[in-house]
Amino acid sequence: MSCRCTNIVAVAVASCVFLIIADTAASQYPADAANRTRHTIRRRLLQRRAAGVASSQRDECVREKRPSTDLLRLLPSPANADFHRHDGRCAYRYKQLNAAWAGCIAEPLCVGVVRDNGLACGGRQASHPFELRGGGASRGASTNAWVCGPRLRAVEQAEAEARPPPQVPPEGFLYVLHGGCAVRDYGCNHVLEMATSVASIRALPPPRRPIAVLSDGGIPAVWLRSRLGVDYVAALSVSGGEAIDDDPRVKKLRAYDQSPFAKTVFLDGDTLVRSPAVSQLFTLLDDYDLAAAFECCRVLYSSGKPYDPSGHLRGWEMQTGVMAYRRNERVAAFWEETRKVYLEKGGAYWRLRSSGEQGAATLALARTDVRFLPLPPSFNARPYTELQAAKVFGAPVYHGKELWRRVADADAPNAGKPATPEQLVRFRMARDWDKAARGVARHGAMEHPSAD
Picture (cartoon, rainbow, N blue to C red):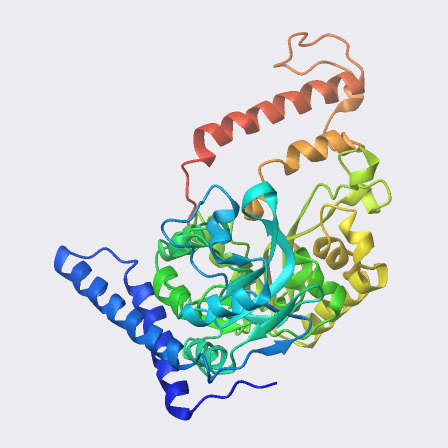
């Protein structure tokens, strides 16, 4: 079935949806009382106008079923919603499709209805499997959607306005944003984290490098550009294997090689850039294809151990939350091999473990000729990696001078007295780790090294 609608209605819906999204984005910025009043009046007028269009569509728009389709964009929950339950999403949840469709037609920002596994809403925790959604059409293995074509196309047209132009600077920072947000003003954790990370880049001294976001459509592109202050928002391609699409941890495997930049520094949304020294990541790409730090350690949940007994070095793996990489044939082959490794082992294998994309990327390093440079841990300062590595590995090999003397060091409590090499190692490691901890407390939290 298709959605029957006149061109006049389609244009009106496109205009209203675009303006409402733009007005919502504009209202996030601080304004004086007059501006706030003007925005409020304008928003209400647009809502009434959009509601009129929606009313005229009741007989014009026939719901179009799209099997194995998801609409990722959640509608902002109304102010009177119960935000203690599912971030207020129950306000747009229904038990029956017909009721949900009627609710969608009456809601200007709704483009369709999705059926999923349901949320417990209402009395006795009854399941409500139908939810109104606002766009972000994507393949969904376990979901079905019913859409109003003109509204969906209007939203997609508005999204196209925020996509990167053909000419993009040669280097920049990249984020990937998956999923929607039902909290008003898109105040979900993953959005707030990314906003904080982007702001930390903007606080760096010149040169100013562009920032791009690859989004699956769960958050409006217009809002991302205006609210987060990023330079480009690109639609994430939905092509890829089913197993990759179904595991949220590895959806990024389809995103990495879609960067608009020739030289990319990729950052997870929960990172904070503290120093202009991050610019060194761009410089090293003059000689290397790919750079990332490693972390300890991937966990096999069923083992009861803080690592993966079946993995190389107990799950020691490449940490993909901070990476620098070039756009060339070797890197493209590496990402393709990473996806292949993931699919060869299968989604069930990776879901039993704490990470999927990182393990696949680590194994792909051995199968390709990518020019890889391991980053110093400080360029991806994870709060637990060093401690976890000590727990998992201990210190299988120590590297230090004058163990042959078998005499305690001058700063040891038993200075000058006989000591075995093992006693010397234990003292030195405890001493040096203590110095490192005190150094971080004294300098590391405050010091911002230069880019040189």
